[in-house]
Image (cartoon, rainbow over all chains, first blue to last red; front, side, top):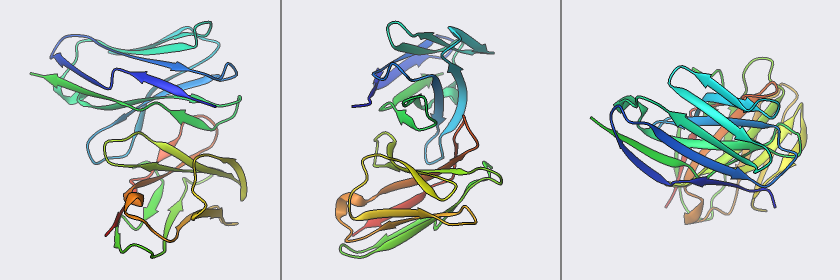
Length: 112
Length: 110
């Protein structure tokens, strides 16, 4: 069935270091890949997204890369700050629809 | 503020009971999604409605049902509640593309 795998489940980095979170998806028809950030007790919020016709997208300190052949996409956060600490979810659209299947989440902790 | 409104914010009830969660989507959004998030877990897709019609179904239990009304608000009905149904239930809406999540309804079943 439709599946999105996300790794690692937890990630601890020192402030200023980079963080990378990786996801793989199963549906070759997926064409939309958003990343959501969820702070403790709050709703998930979109931080960046990428569509299948693009291989990389960057927005200040965050970037996403997509490898359609390998069905793999990654989130890169550079110069991490304590306020980046949160749970990050990747997602993939299913069957070229707007239904999203989410990964299991990565808890990122950035230590000062 | 995402523009998606969910009520109630918190709900405590007993096993065997039935509850209704309500969601008002962002103005103009036709799609409404329901997700379940258990403690320290991911976002499990339950169901999607588009302009009043069921569009997609996920891992939604038979004890759960949902609908979207002509004014586009949606309700998620949870019946014969079990302890394991305790979770944060999110509603999200979309006009195509980004999902905008509400603040969630935290359900505690005792």
